[in-house]
Image (cartoon, rainbow, N blue to C red; front, top):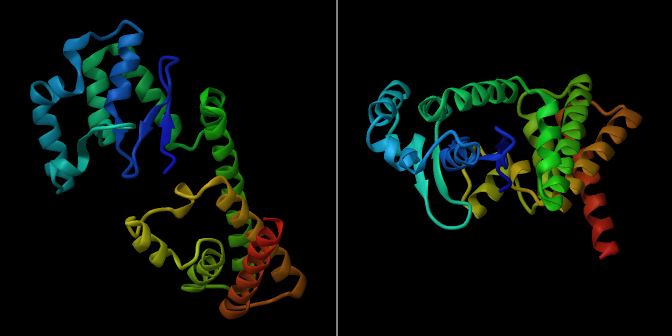
Length: 243
């Protein structure tokens, strides 16, 4: 999965994991690089002393286990990840400067400030920047298709049927089936785990489906789902021929 990212203090982006938890490890490294923190202020040390009660308080208020909102993982891409409330508390603990920067960046992140994505892309590795570009294009194509479906009488389960008709051809199954095969949560946005090629094929399928529905003036759940299926099948077939 391509993690979402935030960036502070001119540092490398702060990762968030698949559950939306923010990397306290990246935050600590950024604070150290800026001269705002020392080695005794690591997430581990903070969680054992100053942060222990707050972590427990957040867990109680969210009615969830602490292990779901504060996680430490090992290996490549690992580190300490925490709920955004905990991340803000940790930033405040590290330094006033970092606390202010994290607040500002998180506010931009939550309000959908698109310039933040541009700043992230500027700092990303070429492969990650390419993925982000395709992910954005995929979102645009999806929104356009959704608007067309609404205008052509699709309702309720029809939206999921149209989406699954595309996923079946591009990913090999409906969303629930793909999530089960990959061990993903049902709430996972599959676009966040697609490759650049899969994102491109999905976006192409949605654009073709949108055009087909509009030109043929197809209406209702079944007709529009059939168009999505045909569009995705055509795109997948084209990619097979190209290979």
